[in-house]
Length: 170
Ligand code: SF4
Ligand code: SF4
Image (cartoon, rainbow, N blue to C red):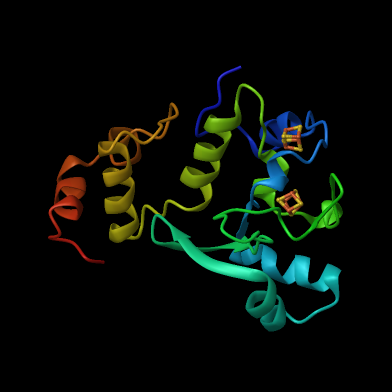
């Protein structure tokens, strides 16, 4: 099976179900959390969205789209650490964990699944800056999956040209 931009959410989650729950990947960092997932997970933890974001998450962005990472427990002198929801080798928020954690897979599709997530949930084709950042990602050797080619996303070459040359800001 080849992961493409059009692989269904259901199909991708099915691959994620093969996770053996060894906790290895969560020991070195955490998954990304979409802004839309914050209410669900903060409600599960019984804390306000504001407190959740302030105390437990780090804001970042992918392709000009706001996204969060769960704060890791960084050990002194190390740039990484286990996700704070990792309890021994199990996820304490398994029932509501972020989509990125549900699909994140250490198997043969792992890298493609991460790209699938980014192009479907972070790349915003209606935001020229997001498009420019994606173009730059590809130009610098970023991984590509079928269906996420620039020419497929932007059949109108003139529009794409204007976006990439900063003639279009909106
Ligand atoms: S995705 Fe892989 S490394 Fe991570 S917990 Fe599952 S089996 Fe372990
Ligand atoms: S939220 Fe759960 S699955 Fe995601 S990185 Fe943390 S421990 Fe792992």
